[in-house]
Length: 116
Image 1: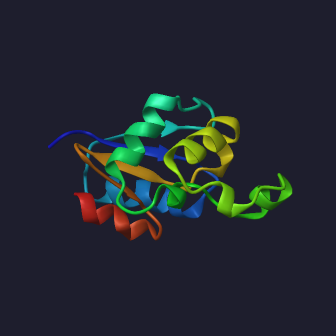
Image 2: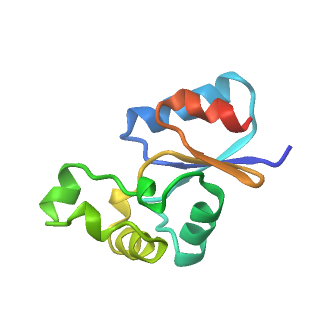
């Protein structure tokens, strides 16, 4: 099995929960704190290649999104999603977990089990 990668924000309970599930199950994984090590365009494109669903699912439409005065209808396409996440990495939905050629946004944390 390929090593699992988890793109993690330690202040997020869902992200911490996914790390805990991987650890409890003895799954080897690398943790990337994406707010400390910002993601580049190629990585975000790779996420969108692997994640099921619409590109817009990768963007959190939370309080910070509203504070920035953003409108969800303006962040639907791959290009729009990548641009907003490059400018505002804190808006990435987390955690993103990759295992080989599969990925999931582990919300709830147990969704990480879908790619093990």
